[in-house]
Image (cartoon, rainbow, N blue to C red; front, top):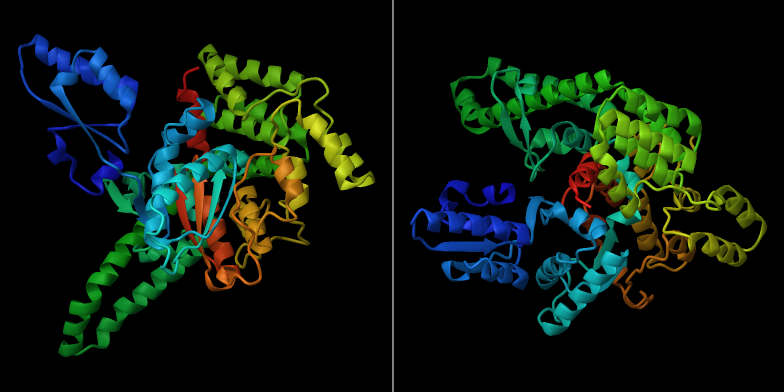
Length: 551
């Protein structure tokens, strides 16, 4: 309902049933209709499925004996523009449905959304992707393109390059604590459909305010991608500038005052209101993070990313569980340890699992099953702890021989290979002295200079190399997930030079940290990124999906 509320007031929709195409929802509808029948109430019902209608839902309505009482329609609601460069399908269930349940129901919806953009801003001449889901979407989309061949052939493309990526290609980035302002606002207050509810602790009143967070907010647009350590300084400077503009009134004559009131005052008041809200939000974030001992938490995360002090980090996670800080947060840290370490050694897995179940309840046994199934929290089987040996061997023998060796190891189970990828792509920056967060030199600033998001690094490398050539080892470390490049770009094709707009498609969700990192890359390299995501992702949303999911 949240995305719909941005388009039409919900109060006018009381006469219809708006539903996702799910069997359980159809059973609820059947209960409503049958309850009305039992009380002798006779009326017609209209079900609008969004984003599309599925035959199985109509079949359930027929089985429940109410097909004749309802009429069905579909609302092809594929894309919600959350900002100038951000489109969301608002399908938060996509992640759980596809990556956990293996349900492919939304593949065609994403392909249709892609074709809608292709028909408006294409043709997309160079499409790259990594991940099984990405390949499926690509294949369905190509079929849609062939059906409508000729529609956009003569048009000069506004977007010519598309990159599709599965969320499970990079779980690490989604599991890390966010430290750019927009990411922290999302982690603290939960941004929903591009807007956030700031409560009394932010507004310094007894009222809550719903604020739309986009480029139209002059204050927010300047701090959204900044590391949080820079935000207070910016806001205090902004407050001084605003005060200077207000002070200009003092020496004005009547005519100048009239112009000031009619042209500038309203804008200044709006900016002042937004400034005080963002200052309030910063103060609220600071209070919460100080209470959580955020610095200690970040230190542990950075150790896990770098592969240092693993025993110390494990002890921190155990203490986190024992103090019952938060079931979701404890789970997130366990998953980060598992994904960065290619699974937990059996002793640690059993110990952490036992402590977690004792602290938070045995009902979470289902959660552990789901996390194992999806590859977020796994246990190393005997013989799988050879990653250190493997890395030493790869230095001594040729890449091809090392490749055969590691393929043998990888055949045991699907693994994250984070350490290998980190080394190959240089995800952990080596800096002399302190990383300059005020003038960042690379995308690592979104994680305080500790880590370059894997997903963003892959996109950067493919764009730099004009394809996957030279990245074969990286693709292999990503477990051979299918990717779907089109014909290679040749020197004769000027598309790369002329067209710098890239559509980055995230299947299973995209974090605000990744968006900030790619915006930074765009500025540095002269690209313009447009983001299309199935929904906004964060570590809390990922964990919620697992905690709520049924086996």
